[in-house]
Length: 363
Image (tube, rainbow, N blue to C red):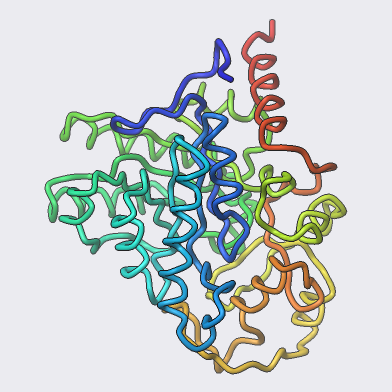
């Protein structure tokens, strides 16, 4: 279904009927089920690659191979379920970032979304041959400028689009704690700044580079607002958790439905970044100094010093995905408390399109 007013989102020769990218939620929240459902409705469906091998039997003993195998399986499953646009979200901070990026390229995914670090050194020849589009995720115009300048100089090429993630997002945030509620770091302000930085590279390389707004985008009216501001589309993750097709356990989805506004808190993640999550018993125990002792069977993140962290975030998020929230927690965006029921992806997108229309035709 497409709306008369909502524009499509074009990234190179790829064209999504609706300008909605489903945010890649890693550690098993967005896999082939959710990604293919979004792609079938005309949006861009995204598989989260971090910790994807957790469902493989040899994950704790052979984590790199398990991750690669699982990512391959999920991309192939998604391809069987949709003819739409499928992307993979990868964290640059992953210790197996290079290997997983190569798997995504080999499997011919349409796009890779690269966050949690600056994607400077990438296997550029492989990317060019595979025609996989590259979309960095940034939280400032400065980060966008560094990436684009580096690519222009080193590869004589620039990324195909950019996602700008503001401080209202769920999960890991590219902001200091004191910046999160500072209006100088609002998504609206950062989107405008990134658009102006990207303009020079569009001229230099004679190509349209869409800017996609993310972090706290909740309604069709929000989508309309950012498109009026000059963004080409939005990325939404929180809204897609409470869908039948989301790949998380029902208890994970219920954590969203049952949470109140005051339950959405900023935590210090072992990754070394602040993160937004739903407060629960596990997080209360961590903040009261009850360590969760663990051994690190693999070093999944370049930045994690497991000897000093109170718990293993990979294990906590794996437990949460499986519905064991006593031993884990759910990341969520600032508007998660507004979610009140589980719907299908089709129903959700129809609601967003109606809200968009309403905002567009407001007298």
